[in-house]
Amino acid sequence: MECQNMSRLIVRYEHGGAVRWGELIGPAPQSANDDVRLVPLPVHCATTAEFLAEASNVSTVDEAQAVTIKAAALVSPVTSDAALVCQGLNYASHAQEAKHAERKSNLIFGKAGSSITGPYDDIVRPADVELLDYEVEFALVMRRQFGARDRISRENIGEYVAGVVLCNDVSARDIQFGESLLQWYRGKSYRTFCPVGPAIWLLEPSEVADALERLEIQLHVNGELRQQATSQQLIWKPVETLNFVGTIQDMRAGDLLLTGTPGGVTAPVTARMVEIIQTHLLNDDVRRDELRTEMTKGRPFLRPGDVVTATLSEKESGRNLGGLGNTIAGATPL
Image (cartoon, rainbow, N blue to C red; front, side):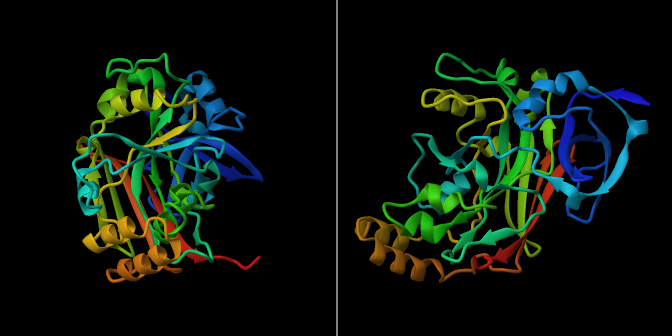
């Protein structure tokens, strides 16, 4: 039976030594052991951008061609050539735990595309990292290029945004805050520091604006709920953020805008941490040692063997849009 879908869940998976594209016709997976029912798509696209250019040509799938695989075969639906543009402190709950004053400007930073890893791959804690943390986020997947001349509105955002995908902005806090002049890019860009997937929720242009207002994200560590929020709680909404980013840089099809994480990270900022950063901003050794002492007073940071799970869902309907499940692994000596 052939069916033509509006919104679709698109995955990439390994089969027969090749990476292929598919469309889910059953529930989105939550763990590596889940069975995944999908229809292989007749495209040969090396990148997410190439797939998005072809997607409209494969809008009809034949369920008679469906196959069932294990979710462990899924890889990131976003390829590593993507630019990762990130928002910081974009939920009031996270801004408050970071002891940040009322937000008056959008905080934008970057993350290496090579940090992208699969939805069920291990997160590798580098040998020089002690304070490993999580940040669940949903990301916008860009449909087309935009830049300084483009003006995005609620009415036309679907022309620029193809859909959304679940991410974990893994962060090394001792590098981010302890290294020379606060190394955000380095602290967030190690390989495996951005689990993505398991699926892109690919939307029709007319669906995007409404869909972005009814998302919910959650994150658990070893079964304990740590983070939960809805997209309606964002401080800086996608339209205004994309217009702001457009004043700085171009974005291309397949690029991601990670929209920020809610409260509940391992180490909320204390008054003492603020004092340390202000006092020792130009003294890296002292700042790093004192921050490490202060930040480890609370609950433990991620350690090898810990399991981090995250979910993305459509809040009103409760529709499951997929889950991440990543185990923390120690670095393998070179």
